[in-house]
Image 1 (cartoon, rainbow, N blue to C red):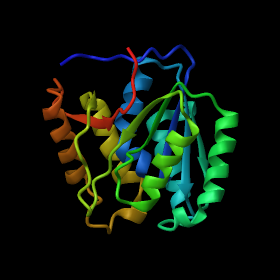
Image 2: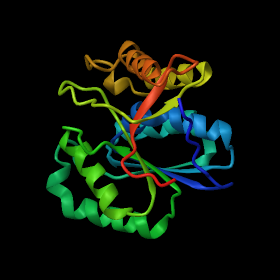
Image 3: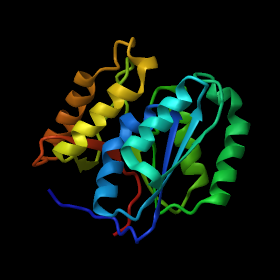
Image 4: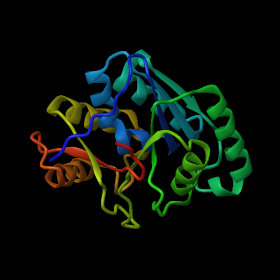
Length: 213
Protein backbone atom coordinates (compact mmCIF):
# COMPACT_ATOMS: atom_id res chain seq x y z
CA UNK A 1 0.00 0.00 0.00
CA UNK A 2 1.26 3.48 -0.87
CA UNK A 3 2.67 5.22 2.22
CA UNK A 4 2.00 8.89 2.92
CA UNK A 5 4.31 10.62 5.40
CA UNK A 6 3.31 14.10 6.62
CA UNK A 7 6.24 16.48 6.82
CA UNK A 8 6.14 17.34 10.50
CA UNK A 9 8.98 19.71 11.29
CA UNK A 10 10.97 19.40 14.49
CA UNK A 11 9.00 20.73 17.46
CA UNK A 12 5.73 20.91 15.50
CA UNK A 13 2.41 21.01 17.35
CA UNK A 14 -0.21 18.29 17.02
CA UNK A 15 -3.69 19.31 18.17
CA UNK A 16 -5.94 16.55 19.57
CA UNK A 17 -9.64 17.30 20.07
CA UNK A 18 -12.17 15.15 21.90
CA UNK A 19 -15.70 15.72 23.13
CA UNK A 20 -15.26 13.47 26.18
CA UNK A 21 -12.51 12.13 28.38
CA UNK A 22 -11.32 8.88 26.68
CA UNK A 23 -12.34 9.89 23.11
CA UNK A 24 -8.82 10.88 22.05
CA UNK A 25 -7.29 7.83 23.70
CA UNK A 26 -9.72 5.46 21.96
CA UNK A 27 -9.76 7.16 18.58
CA UNK A 28 -6.15 8.12 17.96
CA UNK A 29 -4.04 7.24 21.00
CA UNK A 30 -1.99 4.74 19.02
CA UNK A 31 -1.33 7.17 16.16
CA UNK A 32 -0.19 9.84 18.60
CA UNK A 33 2.28 7.47 20.24
CA UNK A 34 3.58 6.36 16.83
CA UNK A 35 4.10 9.99 15.82
CA UNK A 36 5.99 10.69 19.02
CA UNK A 37 8.12 7.57 18.56
CA UNK A 38 9.13 8.73 15.09
CA UNK A 39 9.61 12.41 16.00
CA UNK A 40 10.23 12.81 19.78
CA UNK A 41 10.33 16.62 19.58
CA UNK A 42 6.62 16.94 18.73
CA UNK A 43 4.40 18.88 21.11
CA UNK A 44 0.79 17.83 21.72
CA UNK A 45 -2.14 20.04 22.71
CA UNK A 46 -4.86 17.74 24.10
CA UNK A 47 -8.29 19.40 24.44
CA UNK A 48 -11.35 17.74 25.99
CA UNK A 49 -14.66 19.61 26.03
CA UNK A 50 -16.81 17.63 28.48
CA UNK A 51 -15.04 16.89 31.76
CA UNK A 52 -15.92 16.68 35.42
CA UNK A 53 -14.22 16.01 38.75
CA UNK A 54 -14.22 12.25 38.16
CA UNK A 55 -13.31 12.01 34.50
CA UNK A 56 -10.81 14.86 34.15
CA UNK A 57 -8.14 13.14 36.30
CA UNK A 58 -8.63 9.96 34.26
CA UNK A 59 -7.94 11.76 31.01
CA UNK A 60 -4.94 13.61 32.39
CA UNK A 61 -3.45 10.37 33.68
CA UNK A 62 -4.03 8.63 30.35
CA UNK A 63 -2.48 11.45 28.33
CA UNK A 64 0.58 11.48 30.60
CA UNK A 65 1.07 7.74 30.21
CA UNK A 66 0.76 7.93 26.45
CA UNK A 67 2.81 11.04 25.70
CA UNK A 68 4.51 12.16 28.92
CA UNK A 69 5.53 15.79 29.43
CA UNK A 70 5.15 16.59 25.70
CA UNK A 71 1.37 16.71 26.20
CA UNK A 72 -0.47 19.85 27.34
CA UNK A 73 -3.95 18.79 28.53
CA UNK A 74 -6.85 21.25 28.63
CA UNK A 75 -10.26 20.15 29.92
CA UNK A 76 -13.46 22.17 29.60
CA UNK A 77 -16.54 21.52 31.73
CA UNK A 78 -19.40 21.53 29.24
CA UNK A 79 -22.21 19.11 30.01
CA UNK A 80 -21.76 15.73 28.31
CA UNK A 81 -24.48 14.68 25.83
CA UNK A 82 -25.75 18.27 25.72
CA UNK A 83 -22.82 19.86 23.88
CA UNK A 84 -24.80 21.25 20.90
CA UNK A 85 -26.99 23.17 23.36
CA UNK A 86 -23.83 25.05 24.43
CA UNK A 87 -22.87 25.61 20.82
CA UNK A 88 -22.08 29.33 20.96
CA UNK A 89 -19.85 28.90 24.02
CA UNK A 90 -18.08 25.93 22.44
CA UNK A 91 -17.55 27.97 19.28
CA UNK A 92 -15.98 30.72 21.40
CA UNK A 93 -13.66 28.10 22.92
CA UNK A 94 -12.61 27.05 19.42
CA UNK A 95 -11.92 30.64 18.42
CA UNK A 96 -9.78 31.15 21.51
CA UNK A 97 -7.93 27.92 20.75
CA UNK A 98 -7.32 28.97 17.15
CA UNK A 99 -5.82 32.23 18.36
CA UNK A 100 -3.46 30.51 20.80
CA UNK A 101 -2.03 27.55 18.83
CA UNK A 102 -0.74 26.90 15.33
CA UNK A 103 -0.97 23.15 14.83
CA UNK A 104 0.58 21.39 11.90
CA UNK A 105 -1.67 18.38 12.30
CA UNK A 106 -5.11 17.97 13.91
CA UNK A 107 -6.96 14.87 15.13
CA UNK A 108 -10.70 15.20 15.71
CA UNK A 109 -13.97 13.24 15.58
CA UNK A 110 -15.35 12.18 12.20
CA UNK A 111 -18.04 14.35 10.65
CA UNK A 112 -20.43 11.44 10.16
CA UNK A 113 -20.36 10.42 13.83
CA UNK A 114 -23.92 10.03 15.10
CA UNK A 115 -23.12 11.12 18.64
CA UNK A 116 -24.20 14.74 18.82
CA UNK A 117 -21.23 15.83 20.95
CA UNK A 118 -18.71 14.16 18.65
CA UNK A 119 -20.33 15.61 15.55
CA UNK A 120 -20.28 19.18 16.87
CA UNK A 121 -16.57 18.98 17.65
CA UNK A 122 -15.89 17.68 14.13
CA UNK A 123 -17.96 20.46 12.55
CA UNK A 124 -16.28 23.20 14.56
CA UNK A 125 -12.85 21.76 13.80
CA UNK A 126 -13.42 22.22 10.07
CA UNK A 127 -15.11 25.57 10.67
CA UNK A 128 -12.21 26.95 12.71
CA UNK A 129 -9.14 25.34 11.13
CA UNK A 130 -9.46 25.74 7.36
CA UNK A 131 -5.86 25.34 6.22
CA UNK A 132 -4.59 22.44 8.28
CA UNK A 133 -4.04 18.72 7.96
CA UNK A 134 -7.05 17.15 9.69
CA UNK A 135 -7.55 13.47 10.40
CA UNK A 136 -10.93 12.36 11.75
CA UNK A 137 -10.83 9.38 14.11
CA UNK A 138 -13.57 6.85 14.78
CA UNK A 139 -15.18 5.45 17.93
CA UNK A 140 -17.23 2.25 17.96
CA UNK A 141 -20.66 2.61 19.52
CA UNK A 142 -24.23 1.31 19.57
CA UNK A 143 -25.20 3.41 16.52
CA UNK A 144 -22.84 1.49 14.21
CA UNK A 145 -21.37 4.48 12.36
CA UNK A 146 -17.76 3.44 11.77
CA UNK A 147 -17.88 3.90 7.99
CA UNK A 148 -14.94 3.39 5.61
CA UNK A 149 -11.64 5.06 6.60
CA UNK A 150 -9.25 6.12 3.85
CA UNK A 151 -6.14 6.74 5.96
CA UNK A 152 -4.45 4.27 8.28
CA UNK A 153 -1.71 4.29 10.91
CA UNK A 154 -0.21 0.82 11.54
CA UNK A 155 0.58 0.25 15.21
CA UNK A 156 3.71 -1.50 16.44
CA UNK A 157 3.14 -4.24 19.07
CA UNK A 158 4.48 -2.07 21.97
CA UNK A 159 2.23 0.85 21.00
CA UNK A 160 -0.80 -1.42 20.65
CA UNK A 161 -0.18 -2.94 24.06
CA UNK A 162 0.38 0.41 25.75
CA UNK A 163 -2.82 1.82 24.28
CA UNK A 164 -4.86 -1.10 25.60
CA UNK A 165 -3.20 -0.93 29.02
CA UNK A 166 -3.84 2.82 29.33
CA UNK A 167 -7.50 2.44 28.39
CA UNK A 168 -8.06 -0.38 30.86
CA UNK A 169 -6.03 1.17 33.70
CA UNK A 170 -6.92 4.85 33.51
CA UNK A 171 -10.72 4.86 33.08
CA UNK A 172 -12.32 3.01 36.01
CA UNK A 173 -15.45 5.14 35.61
CA UNK A 174 -16.13 3.46 32.25
CA UNK A 175 -15.52 -0.21 33.09
CA UNK A 176 -19.20 -0.98 33.72
CA UNK A 177 -20.13 0.06 30.17
CA UNK A 178 -20.76 -2.91 27.90
CA UNK A 179 -18.70 -1.43 25.04
CA UNK A 180 -15.66 -0.46 27.07
CA UNK A 181 -13.35 -3.46 26.96
CA UNK A 182 -10.03 -4.48 25.46
CA UNK A 183 -11.67 -7.06 23.20
CA UNK A 184 -13.62 -4.38 21.32
CA UNK A 185 -10.66 -2.01 21.02
CA UNK A 186 -8.30 -4.75 19.86
CA UNK A 187 -10.87 -6.13 17.41
CA UNK A 188 -11.43 -2.77 15.77
CA UNK A 189 -7.70 -2.20 15.37
CA UNK A 190 -7.28 -5.72 13.98
CA UNK A 191 -9.95 -4.99 11.36
CA UNK A 192 -8.23 -1.77 10.31
CA UNK A 193 -4.94 -3.66 10.21
CA UNK A 194 -6.44 -6.07 7.67
CA UNK A 195 -7.74 -3.20 5.55
CA UNK A 196 -4.32 -1.56 5.22
CA UNK A 197 -2.33 -4.82 5.18
CA UNK A 198 -0.35 -3.71 8.23
CA UNK A 199 2.73 -5.82 8.86
CA UNK A 200 1.99 -5.62 12.59
CA UNK A 201 -1.63 -6.77 11.91
CA UNK A 202 -3.11 -3.78 13.80
CA UNK A 203 -3.87 -0.18 12.82
CA UNK A 204 -6.07 2.81 13.54
CA UNK A 205 -8.32 4.13 10.78
CA UNK A 206 -9.01 7.78 9.95
CA UNK A 207 -10.96 9.89 7.49
CA UNK A 208 -8.74 12.32 5.58
CA UNK A 209 -11.08 14.59 3.61
CA UNK A 210 -8.58 17.06 2.18
CA UNK A 211 -4.92 16.45 1.38
CA UNK A 212 -2.66 18.08 -1.20
CA UNK A 213 0.27 16.41 -2.91
